[in-house]
Length: 372
Image 1 (spheres, one colour):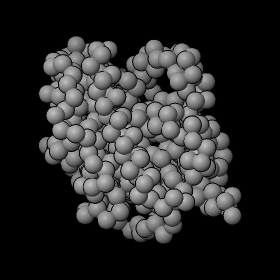
Image 2: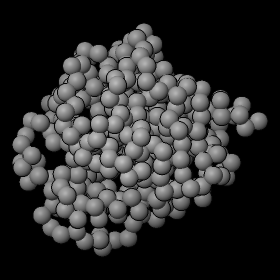
Image 3: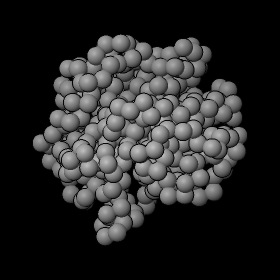
């Protein structure tokens, strides 16, 4: 039960991060702010950011001892034998209100990142070698306030992600195709990386196999035109962006839409009343629907959330007009980690784990054919 309660707390924080501060509906907003928003003023941490030349600055990279990316469910084999590499920005796992940014040596944060990241990072190990940086994450409370301190915390976290990306590019083969991926706060930073770096670098864009920007909404008219890559409209398309946010039905995303509609996109256009990008992870196409029979395998946790079994044909998936990914009635086996409003955000990768592996492999094959 302790493990389950712990994951429930983690799940609550992730949903708060999801769209710039969604309030967990089980508690009043004032209580959540009191619990998670720091009362101290922002101050740059006394220690410098991670040195990404040091293997210890990475949650996952080739040669990492006990690498969480190398976890696989029973009966699944496969390690990358290609040149492809993944730059994965992990979701936030720093929960304290003592600082605006996580101290890089915070052991609890790193351990949470390892537990939460294993089922996400491993989705790509059949086609690529994984690189996932540790970084000075903005604390969850930074997404619950409009204080200038919050913006400073996010910028500091993004500065680490940018330096990690530079180090990643310097250490991988210069001709290696690149998968960009992230989740939750990690996808928030990945979007900015696409806008700031990929969109302005034609040579780099040519190396991008795909960008999996999962668990953070992307407005099709207000954000996508400034990201340098188009949406993935076809399953064998490369050099494109995938994004989805998973809800069981009946879905109740009112708070998500409230925060989303209040934002201004990268184009300067309001996001209000604009559709979010939804690429169906089962079909690999923008929009559309797929029956559960096409789901190659979802990761379902056991009662104590210590293991996960691969279960095919668990849920369907269809993109609704607003851009939500709907998975039908809530499947059994996910317990308290299902968030208010039938939000399955915590399981955005796990629900479609085998299909994501197949999707990345399919796009790599298309990329290699194109480059010949």
